Each structure stands twice: as structure tokens, then as C-alpha cells.
Length: 224
Picture (tube, rainbow, N blue to C red):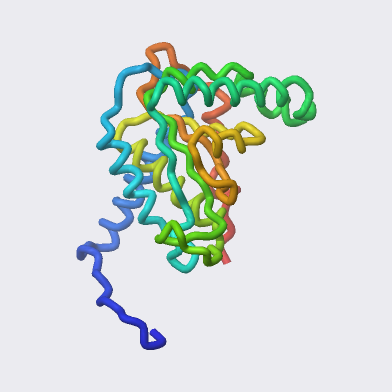
């Protein structure tokens, strides 16, 4: 490999093809039970759970192994309250005229609106920042590559890890989100991509029927 230092490939555990199929199907079935939660209990979630899920996220494939992400993890009631104020301000603009009728119609089946009480009730808010430059060393000035793709994959790992740990989640994307740089003390060259709210579902949490409508495999795949 171009003279670079290498390590031997670490082989996976031996298993038969039927065992591989069973594992893939088991993971698929477990992930199919994941739902977005919009009503959270304030019951604590151990920090160790969040740390383990973030370690899983950090193992995601990424451009040139630059690891172009930073995760701001919020549990402070004061910070959560500030985030809610800013987020709801943007949401009121969104629902009050920024979004066109087609977009609002698409959201209507989910029953969403500008009130985001879960930003204060959930114990954790995780904010992934995409770093345009700066690798493992924070002072690194070199460019990063495939930044959005890399951070997006990491967030997928994070959501899967939290779900498998029995933690409810919601991805929330107010637009614009630059207020998160100020709240989290992150530099301007980092871009907040989303907020991942994590905690236990409230006793009255419910799922919109529309959310259960998933496209069949035949519709979302091509086999060439």
C-alpha cells in the first residue's frame, strides 16, 4: 500500500452463509422498530450510554480518515432552554411563511409544529458539527474531504447504537442552525448538521400512522 505502515486484516468470526443471513435479518428487524419520538420523559439516561454510542459513531468510514466531526453533547438545563428558544424562533418563521405550501402539506401527516418542548424535557441533545478542515489534531489546518457524507454516516451509526440501547431519538433540523455554534462554543468553520434528541419516550408518546408507511424493497433497489 504505497509503502505505508499496515496491519493484518482482522478476520470476522467464522460463520455459515445461513448464519450471516440470520444476523443481517435480525439487525434489519431490530432497526425496523426504530421510530422518531416527539415526546420525551425527563428520566435520566446514563452518560455511559451516550459515550458508547458516540464511540460507535466515531468508527464510521470517512474521507481519508480525517474524521471531520465534532459532537457537542448537551445536558445542561440552561443550555437546553437556550436552544429551545432559538429553535422555536426559527420554527415559527418556518411554519409562518418561510416554508411553501407543498412542504407544509408533506409535514402535516406527521403533526409537527413550532413547539419543541422535547428540547427541554429530553435528557440529552447531541449536535454533530461537520468540520471543513482540521483532522484529529484540532489545530490542523488541512482540508477535510467528503465531509457531509462522512458525518452523515457517523450519525447513522449513532442513531443505530442508541436505538439498540433502548434509547428513543429524534432528528431535528431547524433552519438556519448557526445559533448552535454560539451556544456550543464551536468555531464558524464548523457546520451544525442536525440535533439528535435522545432519552426515554414519554408515557403518552405516540407515532403518526403515516410514519409506518415504508417503501418496499422492490421500490428502493435496482439489481444489475
